[in-house]
Image (cartoon, rainbow, N blue to C red; front, side):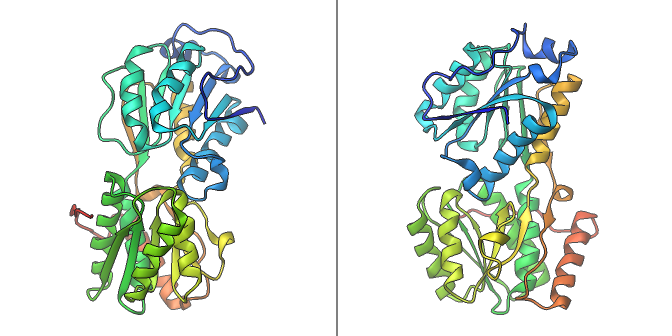
Length: 336
């Protein structure tokens, strides 16, 4: 595997040095070999492959760039928010062709750095509603409202108490979109549904996320959807200690707790990285936000906590939504 991993990056560690390029836009259209692509990916967490959900999905995407496209990739781990801009600038100054941000919390640094280095492509692999004022930017992300809709269909049909819980880290836009989708779709399939929402207050606190989840379960929620970064582990821990069921976020959580994970709603984050590689190869680098919708999501096999009839009903509803046969209105809710 051709990868360098860095902890708390200051200056980028020197890896295999590629030939200098005149600029990423010219580079892509010149037909240069993909093996010459030199990229850096910035994570806010340490050991992202060990953090199931969003960060593991991102890491799997990085692996696709390496294994399938021959890119030379450097990974910066545990980069704090104050160090993001400096880290990205150091990569640009060191002739990296592509710098990838993996969180919407990185948007400020993305906006700050991209216009300064026009010969480097700066990519956001997370939710954003706007682009930096620069030609050397791209963004790839999921339609989080649609993602919430699929989660809501699962939970709304699987619940036996007519109460489900959606628990997050911080009420950022992506979570508000996701939770809004959960509310709207779950009430379509279950008019008696009550959606309990709560936030742990950060993306790393496992004990706090566990505590918040226990409170929702005590109120009667029997299906829990969690999206709290590293803290999602605490949500799953709380669910495991009861007869409640958990819906996995972004990647497959089945191996973490087979009897507790009802299913996982896969976000297919590696496909975003595949699209990036194809765009670079083809020269399709016009600034844009590429949104991956319901057709990109998938459910993992259900465990035995629900009947085969209920599992089939969930699958049918999800298929109808993906195929445009089920209309779920887009209503934006505010959560605190």
